[in-house]
Image 1 (tube, one colour):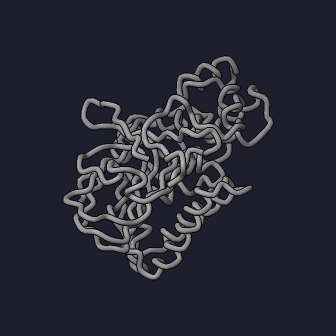
Image 2 (image 1 turned 90 degrees about the vertical axis):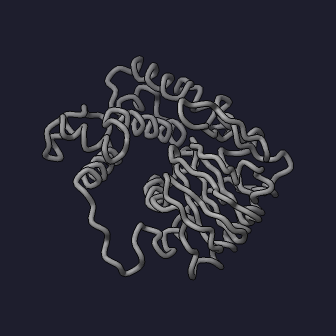
Length: 310
């Protein structure tokens, strides 16, 4: 799996996920060794994909968005797209590495929010979830290697269970069990409320000003607070959600493109097609064909599964 390459950014390397075999989904699982040495990269970098690491041995530290946590196996680490992380002084790391992109989460939209909550810290002790998580990862590894009938559905279901198990670990939701939830500032509260509105049915078909009015703030203040909490503008988050919802509808339904256009907030199907191509590099029809074949996106490059499996 040592097929990781870097795409230069102005500040940090960006690692992308590629699954080179046409029968594989945008997903890979293996060990630090089978994924390759860049799975334990010692230099700060970003991902375009999600990574769940279950560390069973070794020493050093994991640094996530400048927060450093010593490696204390068994330990769970979650990295979401756009976060900056690296392994500091790591030696003898062992365990499981799971890599996947947003498309692999399409059947369970709430899992992305759970992963973001887990990624608020650079590591979580496995606690009483250690044995169930280890068994689940072993089962996922077997499904990935053996490619038995229905393995795609099994892997997606197992990933959903893994995220649920991970959320049960101490601090898995950002606070220790039975502890009061930490106080949240106004920017975080507003951004979370905005995110919930976006995830509602038809939630992406409105202008930025509508969300500001709905949340009781001025448009300018809304822009400022959302950017402070997320690092992104409300408009870019709307476009991201529109793209994701369009992918869900194109891959999971037989709706015509004009219907998908309407449901994602576009009155003009031609404009929707231009928007979708700009955001994904593919037309809606090309994406639907790709999703139907369970083929990897040929534009995405970087971490790849070994041809013989992990």
